[in-house]
Length: 179
Image (cartoon, rainbow, N blue to C red; front, top):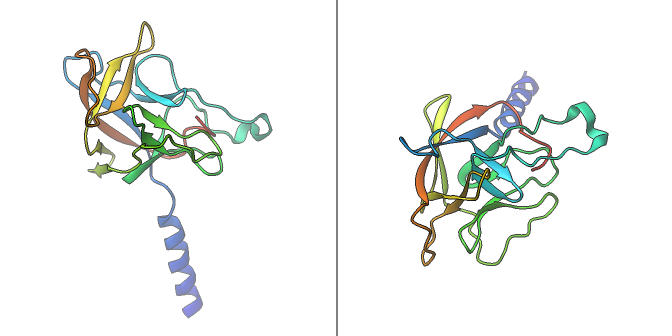
């Protein structure tokens, strides 16, 4: 009987360790960034514009997630992309404020990058994602949407940049092998 209880507790602990995946939408009423998905593209993040830049090794085949949406994991102090690639991909705010993510198989971040300060709140299916200093979206060029930056001291942004809030929606699985 004790072994059944121990096994049940072990299994419950293992299930509790599974990452909680979620997607992110921007909110800023009456603006061009309202209800746009936060998209991982080319090492940076955007609202609007083309879809995510994702990749799956050919040998994985049908075992790969679709890669057509950006999925996140974490949100309790640090934030990662919801990926399958070994080692994962961490989200960080670069020294210039760019909201960025690490390359697959690499933990490299530029010196002065900030990896913490994230908090995710939840009220069931939906929630919020906050970076301690706030996020802004700046026009990125024709057809590219808005590039996302963390607000950091000493960095001025164009007046066309828009602050926004981020809402989350639960996702069931990783979004891509890697972004």
